[in-house]
Image (cartoon, rainbow, N blue to C red; front, side, top):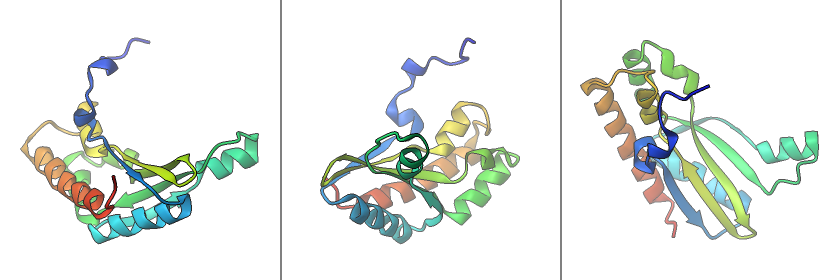
Length: 149
């Protein structure tokens, strides 16, 4: 299969990639990220630990890895309308926390709004540009709340 786009041509900004480092234990970092995103207007619709599941099911030996499914209801509602409901296939907006080493955690996020536009799930118009900008401001606020390195 040939991809319709060249992945090597996609920059971190094209997908709204954000990354932060927290110097704290994993469980503390997960709680800190949850609070930071809640303060910025996100709710946590779902959360789970792929590392726990994989370690249990296939003895993967994975270090702590946690996914928080964050959602801002206003942005989600706007994006559903703009995408003729297709963007729901990417919901919620995930924020991932993984352990680099004990006491050092990485927080990682990509913009489903940007990715949806990039792959044609949403229109490339002013409405979607506004949603992406507004959502980006919320994510910037959340990452600012982290007080990370």
